[in-house]
Length: 118
Image (cartoon, rainbow, N blue to C red):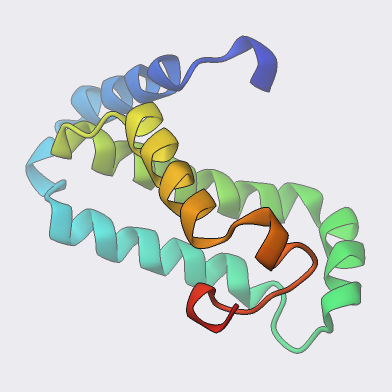
C-alpha cells in the first residue's frame, strides 16, 4: 500500500479527520509537538528493557501494537505539517542532502559515530 499512497493523500486524510471533529483549534505547533513526543514515548515503551536484537523479535510478536504507535506518530507529524504549512517531501529531501553532507559514505559507512566524530 505504501507504493500506492502519496504523502499528500495522507495529509488530506489527516486534515479531513481533524476538520470533521473541529479539532484544528487545539492543533497548534506546541500542542502537536508535545503530542508527537508523547506518542514517541509510547512506542519506546514497547522496547523498554529489551536488547537491540530482541527488539526485532518484539516487533514481529507485537507488529499490530507497535504499528499503531508508529501510525500515531506519523499522523501527528502530518497534523503538524498541515497546521504549519510544511511540505513534507520538500523538507525530507532537503534534510537528506544535509545528512549526506554530514555523513559521507566514505567516512560513515558501518559506523555509528556522530558526524563531528567521524
